[in-house]
Amino acid sequence: MSKKVLIVGGGLAGTIIANGLVRHIGQEIRKGDVSVTMLGTSDTHMYQPGLLYIPFGKIRERELFRPQRKVLDKRVIFHIDPATNIDVENKKVTCESGTVHEYDYIVIATGSRLMPQNIPGLAEGAHWLYDLDGARKMRDALDNFEGGKVIVNVNAPHKCPVAPLEITFMLKEYLESKGLWDRTELTYTYPIGRLHALEPVAEWAKPAMDAAGIKYETFFNTKEVDPAAKTIGSEEGVTLDYDLLVTIPPHNGAEVITESGLGDGGWVPTDRHKLTHPDHNDVFICGDTTNIPISKAGSTAHFEADTIIDNLASLLTENRWARDYDGKVFCFVETGMKTGTYVWFNYETPPNPGAPSQMIHWFKLAYNRLYWLSARGLL
Amino acid sequence: MSERKTIDARGSFCPGPLMELIAALKLIEVGQEIEIWSTDQGTAKDVPEWAAKVGHETVESGEKDDHWYVVVKKTK
Image (cartoon, rainbow over all chains, first blue to last red):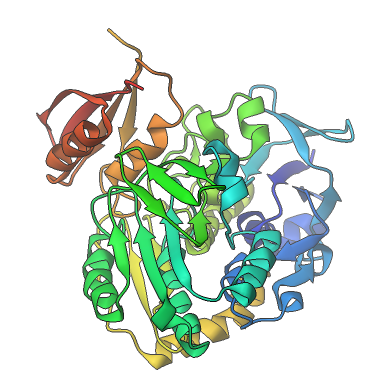
């Protein structure tokens, strides 16, 4: 009887795994010994990091999208039918249509979602660029901005942990280019006592913000926003005025995770090396969906996906585990409109970002196109 | 004793123990506790300082085997 691999989620993590796995086990698929099925929520695949450039007019919207069916290898069975219940005890997934899928191995890659509604007034008072609608509205707000107090407000937990810094430095250069910087006061707020979770990145960001004339407020966990008065207050007791509020909203995992009783907040308990559920060796978790205390970022999902592909391929063909995930993360960091740097680290090696350069910025721009090769499991 | 959850943030460079704690506190009820483990000695100082600033209670903290730990009770 053929083995069934079921991938829940059609984002970066699920797509890389689906494409990578069928390339590794082509012979087994051809013989009908294994099937790989993806349950997605959309017929479109979006390159999420590209949203960063939308408010500044630096990328065209259509560059961010491809039809999911075309991104997927034709050997992957693809259904647009969101999962509504994942039953890991009985190894079956129920979908919105009522269809029930059984599996031998499941990959849960349902991602994270923005929850501005978790903070009173935030959804009404703030702009964000972590989804297309938000990025479009932020672009409009910037078009109409004539100077004043701008706040970039960061909330936990959130994905793409370097994006808040990128947004801040890019905003500064954007406003300079429009001749508005002299009439602007830009303040960055962050939940902990430094400017970034990664200490070396925080050590680089502080003098960079000082030199750029960007203000900052650390230990700022947003309590509420008053859109009428245009103020934002923190749990720590600080209130700031704003004319334009840009937020990185807090995130939760997918609703299907909490509805299925798989994890608080939509984050699934995950073994940090095997990337499996602690009680179920046939349940793999990838990307933002894990509760592993590392960055929720595309590169994390990519490196985790590579490990899962190797392990699934070995289990299906040789009945053995291939290797452990070492916690590897690699992130480009745009430090303005023309320069960039990068950080990489794993469970054992701390990050050590290099000096920003134009070359790294160009590499990041190139990766914005190369991404589609990653999604296809080729890079 | 209150219901207690443990976050194993040993070796976590990003988002790090305090960010993990802040995120986890949003998911529990007032009166519940979180024990955070970290291999960064600074956690034993940073977490109680932040908890005091916000008004949560640090129940205990110290060093155990290969890590530092802090227990925080959500108070509001």
